[in-house]
Figure 1 (cartoon, helix red, strand yellow):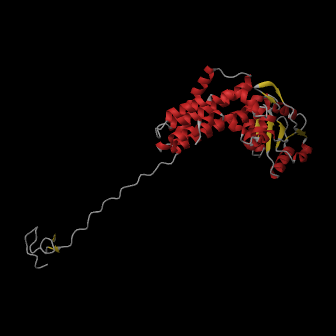
Figure 2 (cartoon, helix red, strand yellow):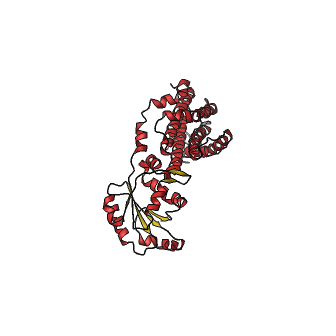
Figure 3 (cartoon, one colour):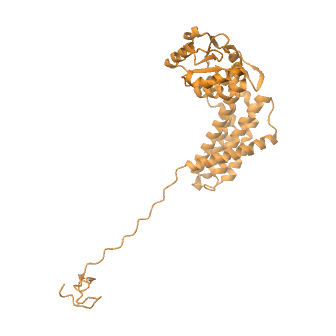
Length: 372
C-alpha cells in the first residue's frame, strides 16, 4: 500500500523511472521539406516555423529542406512535405501533380495556398475545385496568427507521434503542443480519479485507494512538467526541474489532500469533487510551467487560486460527462409470484361452476351433481 513517504519523495520516484524514452521522443529528428516556386513564400514559412509568436526573441536554427518543384523527388525521406502555392498564379498543374505523386507514395502532405496580397482572397473561392488533397491551408504565410489558427492544428493532427519533437525543434508549435499536453494529462488524471472513485464504493478500501491516488496523480504531474520542459526547449536533465518546479508539483499535495477530505470514506458522493480536484490540480501545474516559459515568472498565489477555481469548474463538467457515460448496474427484477392452479373438481350441469370433487350438491345453485 502506498504511504505518505512515497508522496513526499515524488521526484525520487520519478528518478527511478526510465525517462529516456520521453527524452528521445523530444530529441527525435523531424524532417520537413518545403517545396514551391521562387516567390511562393517558402523561406517566409520556414522562418515562421523557427520562431515562437509568443516570444519573438526565441529562434531555432533547425534545418529544413527547401526545394523547387523540380526537386520534389529529394523529399522522399521527409516526415512532412509542405507544398507552397502562390495565390497570384493561375496554373497549379505542376503542384497538383507533385501532391498526387507524394500522396500516392504514402507521404504526409500539406498544401499552403499562400495569400500574399489581400486582393487575392477571392482565389480561395475556387480552391475546392482546383485542389484535391486531404490537408489544405488557405492563408498568409507571413502572418503567425493565421498559421496558429489553422496550419498548426492541422500539422499536429497529422503528426501526433511528433508532438514533443515539433515543439522542441520548431517554436511555432510550442504553445499549441503545451496546451495539448496539459489538457491530455488533466483529462487522464480525471479519468483515473473517476475510476478509483468508483472502486471506493467499498468503504473498507477507501483510505488506501485515496493515498495511492495521490501518488499516481502527482507522478503524472511530474511527468507533465518534464514533457512540457522538453517541448518548450528546456533542459533534458530531469534534475534541473527539481529546484525550479519542485514546489509547483509539491503544491499538488494540497489538492490531493483536499480530494481525500472530500471523498474520505463516503461512497459515490465524493466522485465529482474528487475528479474536479484531480483535473484542476494537474491543469494548474501545467499552466504554471507554461507561464514561466512565456514570461520567465511564476504565477502569484492569487493567480493560481483564480486559475484553480476556473479549472475546478471545468473538472466538474468532466466528472459529470464521465458519470453520464458510466454503465449503470441493472437491478434484478422480481419474478412475479405465480398463483397455484385451481384445484380439480366437479362441474355443475346446471350452472357450469366447479365444485369440490366429493361434493354432492352445487355450492352455487344447490342442484345435485349426480348427473355430472
